Length: 318
Ligand SMILES: [Zn+2]
Image 1 (tube, helix red, strand yellow):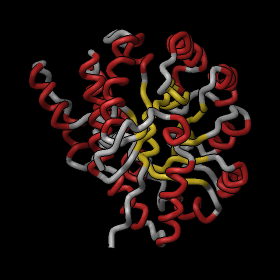
Image 2 (image 1 turned 90 degrees about the vertical axis):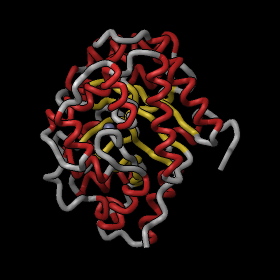
Image 3 (image 1 turned 30 degrees about the horizontal axis):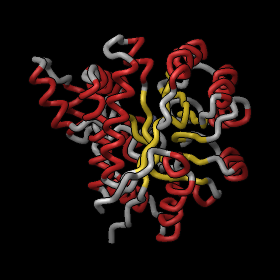
């Protein structure tokens, strides 16, 4: 019997969650050829990491207006709702779109998000936003991200995170994390995904990170540390299968038995097709029993940032 999917999508990226039909339609409207890597990913086939980045950037380039950002937020909301979910923690990259690409103003970006999330709330979905900085661009870039967003941080932004390649040491990010924390943001980091497992320990102990995304390359001692410190870890089986295929078997069962507060997320479901239903099934296929699956679901709600102070549900149609 398929397991009940978790209620909260604990980790999904705005730019990686676009509706494939919308992307196809937009590409056609703009006379753009879809990259082959995107079609390959959509067919469920893995591509090299560069191909994934190419596909991710193609979608991100379409987010150049308030309307398109609103549509992107709604794609997340629709996917969550269709899978039976009730909320999501949404990672977004405003600095990349506003400054690096210069394709949208910060105001239009926030307004598009606000409109999409408000509509999601009217369907009964809770949500919050986590601002993502690019790890391999270094801590100076992290400060620039904060320079951009802190002067007028919308109330739905609850966290700050690093993503991308784990190219610069987390101890060097500590001042950036401190500044974001002082501004009232929760701190997360993609760690132990494309970098060594030791990054997870460093992110927590030297970076002061309060939540880990992936963490799958960490060793047993680090899992025990995460459990002891009650650090939540977002696990995205479909994404890991494509982007961290060499990590096998997946350590989720080991993490849960060590007491790590793991929960499920979809990461980039617009590129690597998945939703909360497929992720729960993938977790079950790793050999998790009913109790372990229930723990995943419970952690997903208890540690979700959208649950403590996200955009409040304005009503429920469920
Ligand atoms: Zn991610």
